[in-house]
Length: 435
Image 1 (cartoon, rainbow, N blue to C red):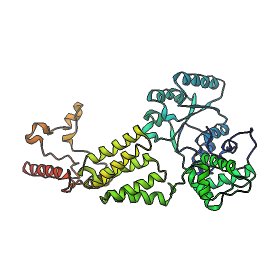
Image 2 (tube, helix red, strand yellow):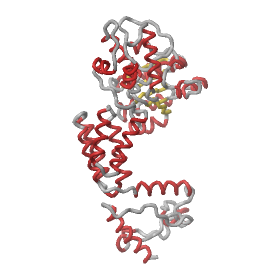
Image 3 (spheres, helix red, strand yellow):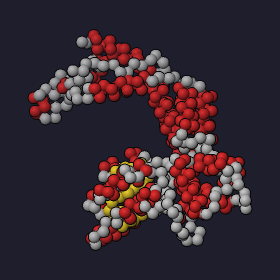
């Protein structure tokens, strides 16, 4: 798989070789769009300078240079480069790769093993990397488009540094287009507006920008220059209405969120539709709906979170475009649900208290006493088991003694939280009565 590209001088390649492959950079300094990693003070540059390279996980969108950078790292550190894909590799293949790396190491050379789509390996397969990482048989560089915290084993993550690759900005894509024109020795047959549209179509994917450029050159007749409409007709791809990394993206998601919070299902549906029409990642929208459910509705309607999560699962099952209706249903449900930010506010208050009083120990009476010494120190002494108390409520104080009781959660009298408020008021009454 080829990704990111060079801003340096192109070299010739085999006839029919894709443009993206021909423009592959020859050194880390030529990589475009990942200066936080490959620039003079970038994380990878510093690693190479130190002479010590550890296992890493490259996390980022497609077409941002993960494969290319891994290959360049091997070249600049004199490591043998081995590449596999989790999609096409089974346990038997992994054993062969590890054995080859062991033989290579016995002969004095270490292996940089690049694993594309590493998140597609199951937990057991991921665990198989641990021994060869620990004994130095391989330096693992895994590439993933998914959040490593959710998709990779904790044991694997603890042995590897996660480096984030960013979507290419418009300036970086423009550099690639200029590089492509130099390689082809001719300008792209696009007017200024069409060129800007092509950059937006690439959506931060460098490889996509070069593939689109090839399509344009193939379609253009002698002397023909496409405007934005002509470009869309040629590549059969809708230009995003907004750049996902710029103001338009944030303006629309803000409008969607505030329409839901403001209990306006019609406006919320309108902004949801606009974002779908612009090519927004549906799972991004799904995540935002989940956030709205917990931030703006909370326990006023506990089903809101269930509905938002179910919409994500329905989209996973149905795909696009059928699954988009599940998001629309969740959007309307959230907009019409009773609103409460009481849990959101309570959590922020609890976090502030945790930072301020983080060194205080819980009161001894609620701590377990598994050892004789702890029993002698009165751990657990005086604890009252709530289920043995009248109303299953002891009224004990659970905060650190030096801190005293605090109130973070103040549910409003709306939706289901009206019932929660009644319970809290009843327990407060019992606590007062029982001292």
